[in-house]
Length: 405
Ligand code: C6P
Image 1 (cartoon, protein in one colour):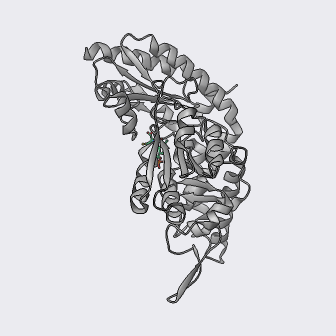
Image 2: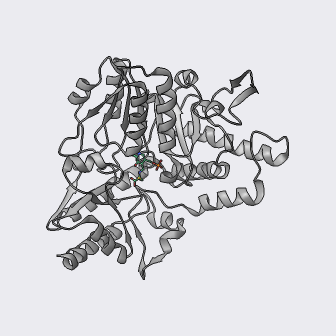
Image 3: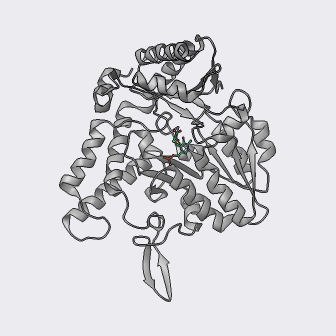
């Protein structure tokens, strides 16, 4: 059982008043709010420990390096990676996927190869593959959506073939909340000799993940969606594959020797970490992960599932409201439309009541095309949200309906 009031007290922003109303924050899919401990960790680092890392012999540089590397081991433990050098720091999910698309693509993709995605992917898991596939003359195959927002394993079996080099799939759809059967997809792909990237941007904060149990080849996520700072992210990759991949960016920290006759590259993980990173952000990401671990992802998942069920039941009682994404396996996302009303107008009226939701295509335009809609209103839940807040959302929606109809 979570002590929600205790958790809420850790997040200073939840006490804010927005347009005269108490903030109800349901835009957690876009980014989660930060607990005081994370804010303090970043501040403390700048106030007391700051220097550049991996360079200096001096005390502060060594402290910074130790903290930064300690968080790498913490992430390793969090997702149960075999080695800490399989954890690459990035700027976020988008950056991680681009790194894999270009680096893996440059080495392993050839003309006629196929890349398999799903119709529910975020643009960040579509566009990098389009760019590299054009360069390498590869084909992208798309596992289609079904009406409830899920994909079928029969379709996956048909589309993943001997020609497939990589399957890149989201664990949880940001637009629909669907939890994909990633274990089954990984097994299908591996049987065909294909690698698998799992986009865990919307999963890492909700679902316990064990990369070794999944046997996944790459897993990516953003720090800012798991209560950590913006500009931080992780790429997990299996050692043997990362070792084969060429560097993505060149610069300081990723080399062993440089001369004009040739350069040799660092070993993992530094080969993929060119330039001065977001040191303070990474240190605070460690604090965010510790915060989540102390509460327990299983506890968080149980609570959020209960909240999702409550919200789904309440919202379905509103006349003219349609939920998009009704798969049996869902995470805490509710995308909806009100009959005849534009999502933007609904979002503005909710905002006037202090309720933050996201409206639009959620960077998943193919999903909107599938349903032939311009976008949705999207409420996404985190561990600090409550049933009372869901009731406020329901009242807000009823008010929006009245004002706009
Ligand atoms: N989705 C949303 O409101 P970045 O921006 O790099 O941290 O994450 C990109 C990304 C990749 N994959 C999925 C499944 C995502 O949900 C996101 C980010 C946010 O839904 C912002 S568009």
